[in-house]
Image 1 (cartoon, rainbow, N blue to C red):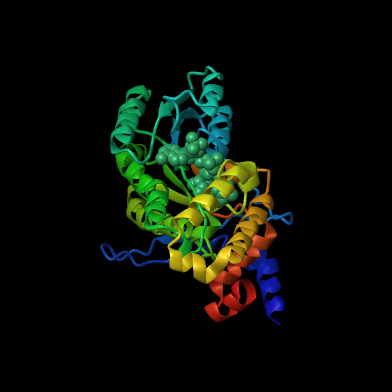
Image 2 (image 1 turned 45 degrees about the vertical axis):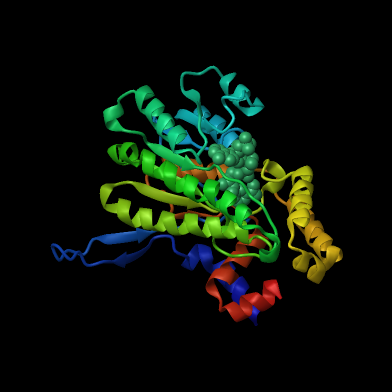
Length: 348
Ligand SMILES: NC(=O)c1ccc[n+]([C@@H]2O[C@H](COP(=O)([O-])OP(=O)(O)OC[C@H]3O[C@@H](n4cnc5c(N)ncnc54)[C@H](OP(=O)(O)O)[C@@H]3O)[C@@H](O)[C@H]2O)c1
């Protein structure tokens, strides 16, 4: 029965889903009732959203993307440049001459410029903002887009995770996003532009052994919603992209990184935790994480397309879900059904 409901929800979405649904809000000031559209991207049978036909001509709008040394950010910088954007590619290791930075620099285009940017450093964020402003064609008209992509990840059950780890992940994923957004908002507001925050499916549904990451991405979701409400009257559009599992395609985890995290975690465990859980339990969890990391999609184009749409479409969506069927369905169940049902299906 439950499966039938889930399948019905899934299959009827293109016809009875959110696209084109309207709600009316009373404007308290003048009594008028402007129509608010809530759009959601059309779903195609292969699980991929089709955004391409919906993307505007770019002109030469300028965007800043954070975390371009590797992964989504690196691909995004190249893709957005190829689409005609002026791209400022924020790189954590530009000053150290990282391979990703060198490759981006080798494009040798006036429309693609790498910028030193550690989103944890107020000074670097401020400097990057000033550099971007100085290189805009018309700084008075502002910056069109900001893509908060920089992020790190880790894993480990609550009792295995140190407070330092929680803080470290939050410093990049959550406070880095807030810090960078606040610094660039004056420029974005001028352009009545776009903010695109890369969250995660784990910003919508939690998972065991992922609390240090989940709480930061839930925070990014909340921040994005508040910002979207505040910016709407000012003409700035805020979107969230919630990728599924693309770990096999990016540098978020490698087998070596998983092993390094695991070793440090075990070494730092309080004695009571080590004794109570035991090495076998711990190793089984690490093996599970390794399997998860090997099972991801290797094609990042759904994520790249989603960000491009959020930046270039006249009607960007509030949320994008580039993920495969399994994770899409699981996310719907976990966000729409009572906890007792979704826990039984997926967690216990
Ligand atoms: N891959 C997935 O399955 C997946 C799924 C959902 C969401 N995401 C999100 O997607 C975003 C991009 O991740 P990715 O998968 O492309 O991983 P990635 O290849 O590791 O990319 C993350 C980028 O952020 C950079 N970075 C790390 N700390 C930074 C800091 N303090 N300041 C500025 N940049 C920093 C990294 O630089 P270095 O390379 O120099 O360390 C790297 O270039 C992240 O927000 C991640 O949470 C990824």
